[in-house]
Amino acid sequence: METKSLRERMLQEMQIRNYSSRTIKKYVECISALSKHFNLSPDQITLDQFKEFLHYHVSIKKNSTSTINQHIGAFKILVQDVLGKNWEDFKIKRQRRDKKLPVVLSKDEVRELLDSITNIKHKCILSLTYSSGLRRSEVLALRPKDIDSGRMQIRVECGKGNKTRYTVLSKDLLPLLRYYYIHYKPKTYLFEGQKKGTKYSETSMESILKQSLAKTTISKKICLHTLRHSFATHLLEQGTNLKIIQMLLGHNSLKTTSVYLHVTKFDPSTLSSPLDSLNTKVL
Figure (tube, rainbow, N blue to C red):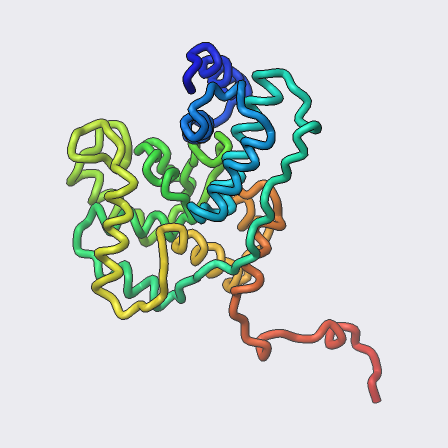
């Protein structure tokens, strides 16, 4: 933002509301982009100008629904909470998200992907991402103390929305994690960059997936989040309750988790009709 005091007030507002550092950084970037677009201080930008800005990002820059909604969220905080204006006067609705089904790997494809990795650290990173259903940022924020081998669970302290939750720790992965820990001796974070005590980078994590995928026969277009989608889908196929999966993933709404019902494979021959349990006389 061009006006330092305005920037500070917005930062303070988001910090008071306990927004994550990631969200704060993104929202500040959104307002800075808006300010630069019109070469005006954010508090001088009108509703029509903001709509013009959104239209530019939708029609020209082809931004995703998520990015557009981030711009709207940032502008709402500025207008309503920092400038003290009535948001209802602006009547800007968030974009409806496209109802696309996630790409999911089969168990055989996950096995092929993980088996293609020979580097211990790389194998641990992708294996942990899949086996615990973690987001990329959550994997990179893990500390050694978050791995609870006694209770076979992982504490996720830097989840979306600054929420803390627990997820499952794979018993098959634990020996590899122990071997990795002894070999690499991480200082602060479980997975660190070349400099001790610093987080492993997001781009490096993406590179691991890209390089590993190139060694496989998998033709699906996937990203790191695909491993999280696959974790949830495979749990559902194993008969895990959807509510439990919601808790493991850290979703606020069961509706978000229910998308996996649409990509889950099941064998109808393994099911029985509820009529079969009634013991009623059919003939």
